[in-house]
Length: 149
Image (cartoon, rainbow, N blue to C red; front, side, top):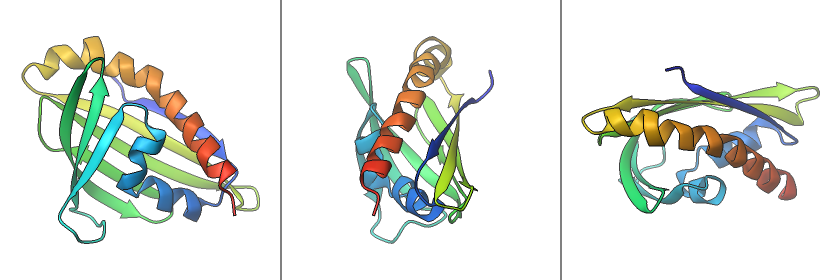
């Protein structure tokens, strides 16, 4: 199956969006399934940094270790899951629009399934993510535009 791709235009500069979305502590603020994020280590986020993201799908919570594989401020970032039956793979890009005071955020999300994840991904995880991603982007847009400096 192909990756889930969603875009949203936000009335903020690329730098503002990038600094917010690449700060893992903000994930639960704009992603409805994200329950918590715990960094592994205490160094600033960089390529190779890892964090445990706990997500709620239905009534269950699933922790997943994510690793940063790319950081290209303020244009793009890439993170991938490194453990568990369902491993998310997210690539984000930010394009400046017009005079640079607006931006287009595009998120590409895919999943790698292992063991029981081979059943969970097509039946539960992918349909859930397809519904959630547009809502998450709209929530992010609302948060960032309401907190414009």
